Image (cartoon, rainbow, N blue to C red):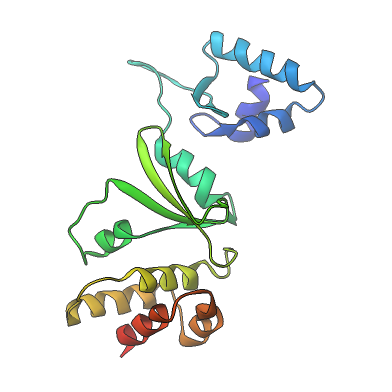
Length: 199
């Protein structure tokens, strides 16, 4: 089992229970869970959280630790070429330099959430999940990121802030036609803030 998983996923990569079941489909579910338990006992597999495992590497401090960011990415953002979520909120504004507030909670908009808003903890990282207003895919992710950002703008911003936002929008290669196509999924303030940025 470990050889198959290592070949397909590699080491220090989140592997979900469903992945293991699909890889070992010639076995019953009960037998696969027995194999998982045996691999954990042998130190070949580590349980990160319920239903999330990884193949560790050996370090001088013992088995390697799984990167929480990698788990969050696979659960809510992307898996290979399949895209289904993006970061939003203060983390994006902080990254752009518009706010100095450091969020201790990450916000993510994702297709992989059915509740409008829900808070979860992955490892020790708190994450606010928001259900995507429109189905996210590789073709529309940039325009939805912009609309989500514009919808979340609060308070007053100066010309320098708008300049940064304009540059960010330009870097994502989002245009007014795309914004108009998807703005129906967002409150009117998203389009209004976009037009302010582009003014």
